Image 1 (tube, rainbow, N blue to C red):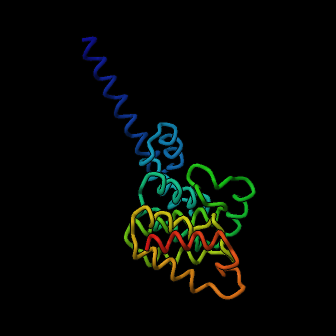
Image 2 (image 1 turned 30 degrees about the vertical axis):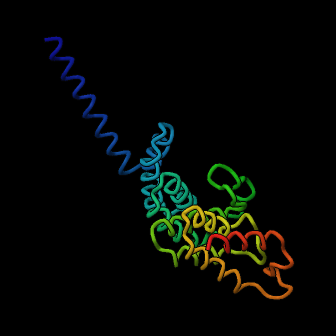
Image 3 (image 1 turned 90 degrees about the horizontal axis):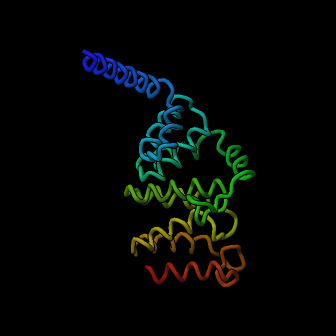
Length: 206
């Protein structure tokens, strides 16, 4: 009798837990983001971060969804929501605020030195990994500044292409850079050693 009562009680606890789990998942995804993050459940955390953005529409939640999806290897989601993020009306203000408080050369940033370059870089890489190379190239070059920077999305995307031994795509990046070059300008490789070394790397890979 005691064992039967204990089993019934345990079953009720499980049912209540499942109901609460479903409620939080559906109505309070931010709680699930925190919970799955604390448990190291990277994939589930990425899923709930997307759900949180879909619920709130907030630019900070959208940026979180992009970075968590990328970290989890959910490249389809990172590509889709990364493109949305970079078109968000509050994106520039969000990046400025993040730049004031965050070091984007950190764990996910790698070569990327600013918030804009970070999000452009992981979006471009995700597009590349999903097979949309045209979009990846457009994203990376759309974010390029007035001069070459070895901490931007173009150099990041190039690194991924070189690692993949994608000679054709390396050639496309090189062609885009050549198109920006002009005698005496900021993309004149004869005047900028870092740019020349970068293009030499692409020439070798292509």
